[in-house]
Length: 170
Image 1 (cartoon, helix red, strand yellow):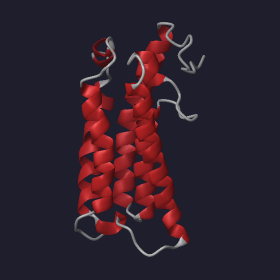
Image 2: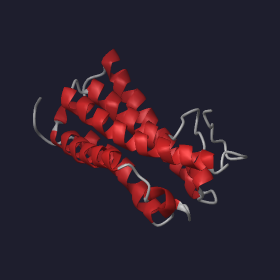
Image 3: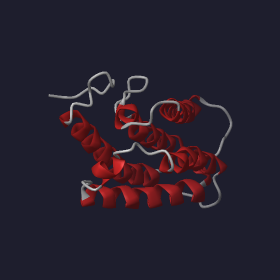
Image 4: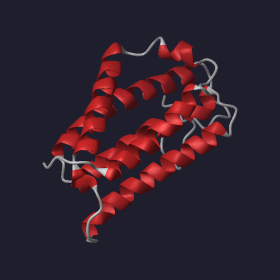
């Protein structure tokens, strides 16, 4: 692992943070009710994962563009998932901004606001051959996806799946 600046990592973090900053002002009205029930262990894993992923993608130039090889398909797939993540947010911000809107499937992805960026960063780790990013993403994914799966489950328990596109597992 080499150290330096990753402009690709910087772009990914901007793509991740901008919609989340906008979301902070456009949360679903009843989101606080869900947030207060978040599992503290999952929240801890999410926070640690966020810190580690952010630091690694900025400090390792392994993720920057290089001469084209078939290996670059990992980066292309990763970037495609980040574009889908942006489109997920476009759909959410254009909606009524409810829990239903936040947890509707997007392009077949359940809890897309969590699964798309986690998967994108995982593929970025493969592209950069960076085991540290892959491990950090695993920590992040357990926490971040875990929290949102619990929110989705709670929304299903309140009958929000009707007309919402939320697939409730029985």
